[in-house]
Amino acid sequence: MRILVKYKDLKSGVVRADELQELIQSEKLLAFRRDDDEWVRIGVDPVRGTGGRYRGPERRGNVLFM
Picture (tube, one colour):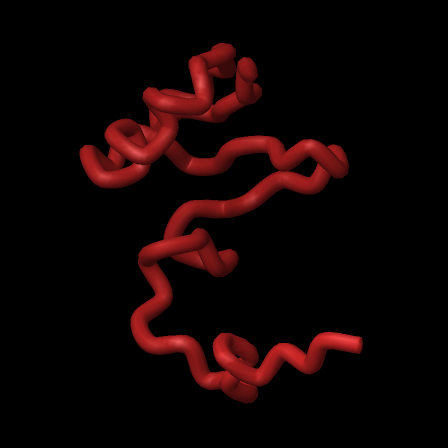
């Protein structure tokens, strides 16, 4: 899968999904585009795996089978 990104130098590019995490961690990106055409701004919007502890209700282990 390819992801549209915007670098800190304001240039745009397309990267593979497996490259995205490294670019985020190396602080080279301003934003990337999600599948739903929404831009995720690094350091502003929540990014999976970087937001600390989950604060919502516990969902694992609470599955009811019918």
